[in-house]
Structure formats: structure tokens, C-alpha cells
Image (cartoon, rainbow, N blue to C red; front, side, top):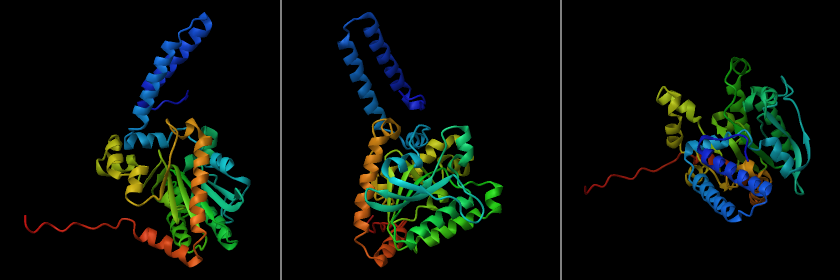
Length: 325
């Protein structure tokens, strides 16, 4: 049972607690109450399905922020072998909000990097709650340039509420660091695949997200702004975050329907933290599938594919008015 409970999970947790109590009572008293246990198990399963298969956009945002959810380093160790982490941007420092290095995905050598959050106060302070400084993006760019030089595919894992907006970032030119990454990622002649594993917030996510293929976990989100930030601008009140989440169309399904995402990676009932190994296996399989498709393209085709993909984002056609009405 999860030690962290989201508001919409309370009924499920209460049923799980009752089920545990019933099982313990049966064992302690040596009573056969299997029929009652079966009924409660059935009720619990129905509640889980009803809850997790009908999540609202805001509830999915809450799921993407679950503190037990697997993070970038977890996935790196689950889907790759022989990972060699590379540190520092060779300009200022080593930002732990972005980690990465060379590794093997099965027999395929890759450069894998992504945004990293912490599990507790100490680790969150070390990686700045998953909000990279400019040096984080410059480190990511250094790693991607190395991959491009040695013709190694690039895999990026995105899980950030956004780049750090504080004065230190402004002093070290955060906007310039992200802008340079966007420009340079369009010039790399190797396949690039991005996977949104949790939060995909604003330019902080896009700074390592200019890719040939964008995959999104079922309960992750990818948006130009966080729901709270959107609510603060439009309604002058962050309490309207739920309305903002619906309006932003930021869920995996919305992204797939609008052509912004190329695939959705299914999560276990209850979220990725319920079975991180299963999610990692699906992620690895999906990455390898798309990587095989991209490796059949020439360098020029990869560049054109990436360019056309992002040029098409946000393009829409208006239906002309019916003149007969």
C-alpha cells in the first residue's frame, strides 16, 4: 500500500486497509472468511478501475508529481547497462537537476540524459527539486554534442516543473542556455527520442525535448506552463489550477490526439510507482521500436523529420463559414 495518498485515492486506501485487517483477523483467529475477503477484493478492484481509468486532467497532473513515482536515474538503471555518468558543463558547475552519460540499451550504445528530482529534503536540494540551472542545460548540450560527434543516438527523459526561475539563473542566462539547446538540437544528425516520464513543464522541458519522437507516459503531462502558473495569469488565483489543467489539454491522450506526442506508454493501474519494472520494460520496448525506425533514415532525413515535426506543431485550419446559413 502506498505511503502517500492523493485526494482521489482515499476510498481505495480505506478499502485496502479494511482488506488487510480482514486478512489479519482471519489468520489470527484461524477463521475461514474467504468469501468476505473475495467480496472486498472484488469491490476494491472495481474501485481502482473506476478511479484510475477516469482520471481528470488535474488528477493526472497530481499523479505525475507523485513522490514515489520513478525518476530519471531509476529508469536509467532499469533500462540500460554499463551507464557511465558524465559530470559538469566545463563552464560553471555540475547541476544535478540534469544527469546523463553513455550507456547500452540492449546492444545499442546511446547517450541517455534527463531531469532528476529528489526523494527527500537533502536530495531535493541537491537537484533543486528537478528545476535545472543554466549549467544543467549546458551540461546536457555538451553530452548531446559528444553523442552527435560519435554518431550515438540520444535518449532524453523529461520530468521537470520548469527551469529554475531565480536570480541565479537570470545572472547566468537561463533563457540563452535553453535557446541554444533548442537551436543546436535541430542540427544533430543522430536520432533523438524524448520520453516525458512525469512533469513536462514549459521551456525547462523543451530544453532537452527537441526530438524526432516524443513519447509520454500515461499519467505524465507536457505543457507550455504549469496549471498553477496558468491559473495565476488568467484568473489571478492559483486555486483555479484544476480549470487550467482542463483548458491546457496537457494529458498524454490530448497530446497524442493533437499530434504533439508520437506514442503513449501505458502505466499499471494506480500509476508507474505501483510497478516500476513493468513501466521500464514497456518504455525500453517503445524506445527500441522507434529507434529502429529512425535508424533507417539518413542523417538528412532525420534533420528534415525533426524540423517538419516542430514546424507542424500548433498548425490548424479554420472551417470556413457556411454561406448558405
